[in-house]
Length: 307
Ligand code: GYE
Image (cartoon, rainbow, N blue to C red; front, side, top):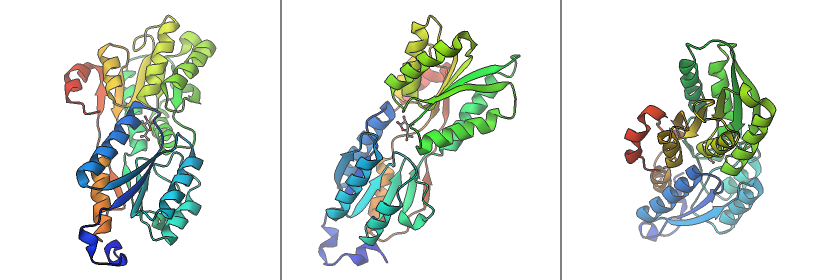
């Protein structure tokens, strides 16, 4: 049954679509760009947006989704802070006949009828890209490659998948060893704090830092400099997102590479919302296309970056 058919009355064409969106938080440069993209795309599409910030807490997102159901919004979209624990609230939305769109992060619900589509990046592939870059970079070196890993938010899809994809690639060569791995919650402050602890524990043993996002890498760069080491030289640094801050760090010679993860999901979200309301079919999975940027190309690419 199309959503349009389910709505009573004839003034449908004139009625503004109301979209409830529950955002993860404002933990990173990526997230800020994502919020901006969603807000401006809603405006351009003439969609009324009810925006709610969950401050990285699942309980806040569940509350926001329940509030959207109570307000009878037309569509609910959200970026789930963690992957598990959504079935109950998603069943409530389904019972209220409100379609749900997942953006950016996935849920691990077995029942895929609980949402219409999931749009966002392939985080496992991003992890593989990071791993492949590292294997290639180290191919002419000898001896162990000691890696420290800054993970994203515990239980979040990007943290789980970026770890998995990276490990999948490096495990082919026993020289590559993850000697420490801890969460930095996708923030600069935590990235710095955890890197300080890594440096204290392992010191000059550390050859590589793999950070699940740029913000944590940027925080860690500060910790590395404060420890008297040279980022991107003494320690090879790989991160993910390719936000402007990462390009600046690469141009300054402090970050080796960033794998792209585009936050500009707003326009495709609004298209999906309109299609759903018009009763048009929507693809179950919409994957974002993205590349990888080593420091050598950073200065040339920087002016073209949109986030
Ligand atoms: O990489 C990180 C943000 O879910 C893809 O969340 C997103 C991640 C992004 O905090 O910077």
